[in-house]
Length: 304
Image (tube, rainbow, N blue to C red; front, side, top):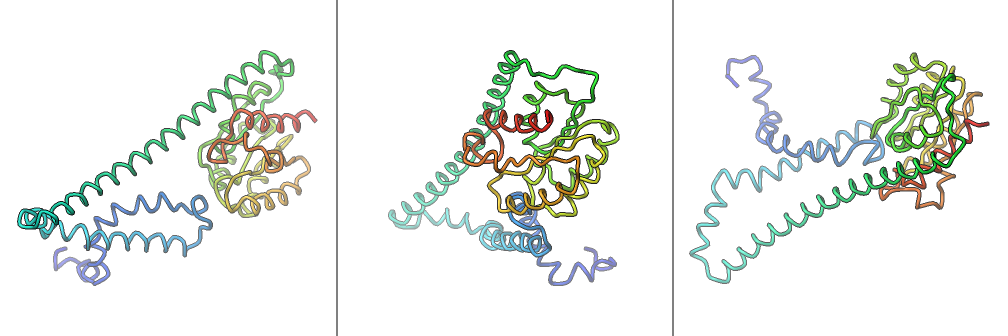
């Protein structure tokens, strides 16, 4: 910063100099830390203290990187260390080489394990979707209860990735007018997309889920219900996820839904209880038996 700049006094303070010296480490670490500690998803809560803690963790890791990686590299310590190996005893050189080799092996092993795990999860998800589609096609061919009346409004279906996973099977039984679902969708986004979509499907029964991806507040759930309150029928599916917020979310959903006479709550947490075969490895997304049970619960309400 130029000494004559109006920002020079601010950027020359000790806190700003400290941050500037560690800016590269902050840049590298912030994405990792913030992706692994997402509020209301990986961690419970979303208050200011949690955000402050995440920033402090980034600063701490950046400081460690500066002290033990960046400065030694800049000052040539690692180069001197390797050059000095030829003057050390054979036993010392062997230990150093083994340490370096071990570090490489551990890094490769951890990276490979994470990659294989990600590939396996992707393969499992793809296999589950393929099996669900195959089973849906078989049921469609053998089932006389498929709705074919195109004169009545189709369903408005909205929610998160669980809704995405059941849409093909649901479409075998009910006409779908509009579907708007996305992986990882939280309640705030659901409110916004529901406001936009409602004007196009004002005469359609609505099927929605919420509470899988973050802790809910009663005001937010009520905001969703106020948007859809004039639909001819409202079907809300609650949550069954291995998360700390499951019970509190379901209590809030049940309380709010009970205030709307045209709304029915599908208690997916009770339907899926003691049925591990319904779920994929993550305990949230559905295998073909779970997809069929989820759709069956929705159809049961629609046919009443």
